[in-house]
Image (cartoon, rainbow, N blue to C red; front, side, top):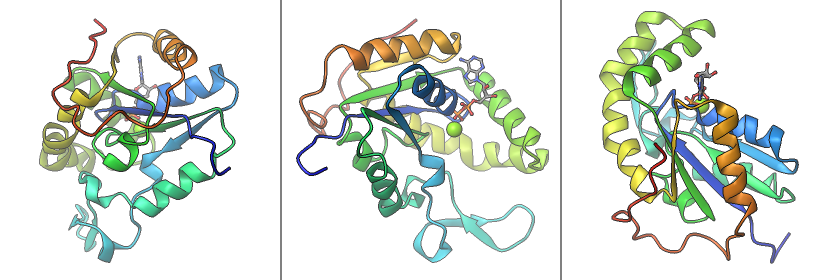
Length: 203
Ligand SMILES: Nc1ncnc2c1ncn2[C@@H]1O[C@H](COP(=O)(O)OP(=O)(O)O)[C@@H](O)[C@H]1O
Ligand SMILES: [Mg+2]
């Protein structure tokens, strides 16, 4: 697919803001849309990433609250697998924190939701998937909360559009559908130095 610019939407937001749900719903709504879940792109070899002690005492694990734990090669490969897609949504907490994703994106979106709602949603999702509730809550207090403040919340400044993650999913999908259907980006991101740009509020 050489020469064909990849049309990429970076979709970031704190854990529990709804980026995975919105990404999936957008792909259902817009045929030809593929989704790359950054949660699937972490290093698997603990020698290659920052690590933290496992809560169950089982040695050390890759620190999922550190953007350096994402494997650039896995991200590139995941995007490359969808080279024929009309739109690739790259979603996850660090979608706007990672230059590798941000600078390739034609559109950058951030889903904002209050911390209590995000925590409740993310904890429920993990506990219902079988994770230990104590570990989930310790993970938030000892790692997730700081990671959000340090890496995720500041990345909002890179967004072209900020969505209210408490709105119904179909509404959010429609906003993104209109955004990506209207203007087609000329190419990758305009520049790296957008941290001071004021994104449009959505409330
Ligand atoms: N806009 C929304 N309104 C209500 N519930 C939502 C919304 N977005 C996500 N959820 C719910 O919150 C939980 C976490 O959503 P998820 O997409 O996994 O979050 P993230 O990927 O941002 O961590 C899921 O159970 C999902 O159904
Ligand atoms: Mg997710």
